[in-house]
Amino acid sequence: MQIKHKDVQIGERTFRIKKFPAKTGSFVLIKVTKILAPLFAGFKPNLNAKSPEDFKFDDFDFTSAIEQLSSISEQDFNYLQEQALKVCYEVLPAGLAPVLNENGMFGVENLEDDTATVMALMVHALGFNVTSFFQGSGLTGVVMSLVSNRQG
Image 1 (cartoon, rainbow, N blue to C red):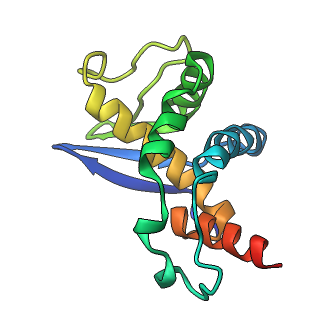
Image 2 (cartoon, rainbow, N blue to C red):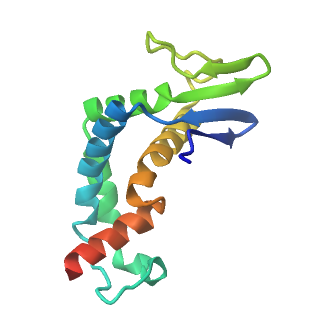
Image 3 (cartoon, rainbow, N blue to C red):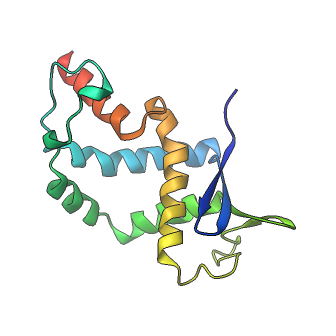
């Protein structure tokens, strides 16, 4: 059975992250893949790796990765952030409150100047919605799929 949501605690607040609609999720996956692909350009994989445990962070050029991330266009970033926040809800005593209203304004209190919470929600939402494509293992799954593709 597919998991449809997950609850996350950020500070004193609880948020529910839901799945993207399939059409949105497909496009977000393409966008995220486009952003992630250059991150691995400087990766020197262990071609003898058989499992995720064989991945060594020394093989990854984090400086290059950060440079690639910083080159994301504002338009792409805004699109990804908006889509991510649209599937986030704060769990309140009266029920779920959408983080973003349909007009794009925050639907819950005290987020308009809380960059850390907004970024955390974005990361949680993208991770929850995209990692299942990489067999639920996140970055390690992506790295291992790149390694196995280079071996074949």
